[in-house]
Image (cartoon, rainbow, N blue to C red):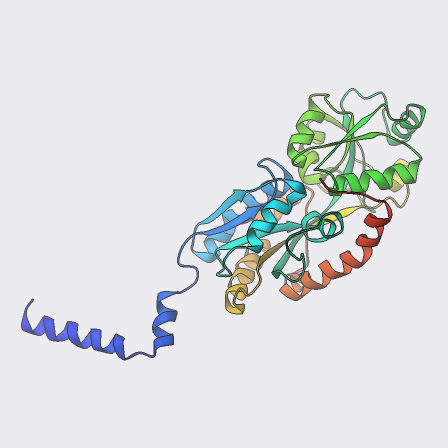
Length: 330
């Protein structure tokens, strides 16, 4: 090294060494400096997995970093969520949570974590009504005929669910109470596998998320009797609402959100939230989610506090109902 070059190198090294210790640590730990993992607590191919893959394609652009999806399924999502509860709070392991995992599971299981206090909310994402669907050759052409057949044939039909205690089972129990029908529940490790068996005729019916069932209903692979909402889906305007189909007031929707482990630094939460908002305001992303029957939360509700309030409100509503119905998880 030439004398002049050596002097310049020593001056630069001395300058860096003279920086405050915390500043040097910050320079070394600019977030995100390595790939981020989002745990999806359900199998590949289901609604949660599909939605997360749409979101992460765009989040990579905002974060300027790779975002990896890891599917960790089982026990209605509680296995994957538990993994994130134990993860380092450094912003590199997040969880895609749903009404199932961050509301219902708290009433269904003796969990090794607290669904509220062991996580930091980042942002709500989307909400979705459910579809009342049956196998394609089921002996009913509309919802009224479907209910009449179930009443005339108690316990003969089988209904797929996203695991014991999943949202589809909760919705199914309330459907039974609302219609005076009885049928058997068959738990699966996620909505995707259940819908595949519905297509194959291995089960008879589902009250399924639009993310799981809408594409197959539009393709004619399953029969769709109604959407559990006040308005028809823009992505499937030919499917009547429950009000129109003969079961007025039977509304049921779930929502998705993004969480980090407890003690994740606030500045990291702000960074991820900003990338999430950028993603959910992207017109291409919005169009793809709408095609799946997803409703995106308004921009002023895409905040950590809005997700915290939503979760607590839903817990206050649904925990007493789930416990009164004696619905149990696996």
